Image 1 (cartoon, rainbow over the protein chains, first blue to last red):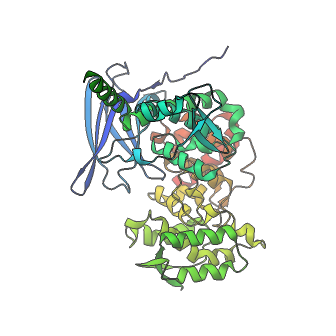
Image 2 (cartoon, each protein chain N blue to C red):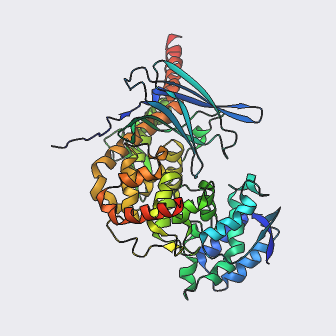
Image 3 (cartoon, helix red, strand yellow):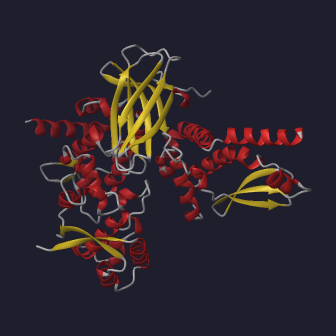
Length: 265
Length: 249
């Protein structure tokens, strides 16, 4: 039986624990933070720290936020001196010192703060094809190093799903993102480096750790189980982030409202 | 003294440079020289740089620090890809001359070594900006980053790949620890046999990847990190303690 070991009793904090956005004031960039750890029973001597990195660089800052306390907490950090304040990645850490070691007892990694104008919706490079042989209404295929969204062409499936249900594509996109993320991390062949690199950048921008794509095959024997879990967690959090950032739930809600409106007439 | 006026490649300049590195024509040196001087594919920056043959990555980084460091003319532009690509093109001949290996193709190597593409996974391999950013990330005490800066510019080696390639290892106490373990300050070079297990850089990187989930090691002192290392690093712990003693004397 597989036994999971968690020496420090570390809690992986959910994304909802933190809200962060970049506010632009004149020439300054302010990182506005709001965190709430009420549901966790950390030791009152524990400290809350924030690590700020600029995506794709060595740039790194570390800020002490507060002692652990329940309720809403806010902080403002001036990040104007960082090279690209609109491209930051955050890590929230709850640290407790015991036995001469700084134990990590709470962790939220790869948090992407919201920025004034988020244009990530414009990065459309997913290939969509019609496949007349498929009995499954849609599925992801990976062909010659490229992820492809295949929609069955049987009966009117393709036309109905792609053209008539205007919420179909938005509704499945987060799941597409999750599947492609798992594929991209596991794919070692990289048959189409141009396409691969586009996806890699896309995932890193959504907060997936760049290290995952550069994994050394030789490490497989050591951390297989842990690595598989990391992939799964990263893919889910990336899909959530994509959905949140692009307002997928809101898009579907609007699509539903408009359908209801038409029916009502 | 060979001072050059620094320019920055335009996008087409960087593309042309990338093509030359990829194709590696026989007259590559002349072609790159032509490209460096071509006003159609590069722009003036107003800064000067002394182009000298560097002894090692530290030497190169220190030289670049004068221009790209906080007091340098190009500090605010230090993340510009076209600028680094032009500088590496300008350094091409000097670096080729400083590498004694006979095989030019091997000396040139892959595109990542010369052309900065803004890719988090590969940019540390850039022969010119890589040392600078390693220096910058440890600028409070750059000698603590000798694990990343001790080797020659054109042959950075495995330790650089392991440490520079991981942001969490590339600065702070972990980087200092790697220097204490694998760098021999009396010989000013990396220790012989460092890539042989146990306790080699590959294991070092794996160990901290594991630890990252349980310990906030960035906030620990290097002395504490040494004592925390497991038994398979024993040989290197001894070196680290000795080196630390030397720095404290």
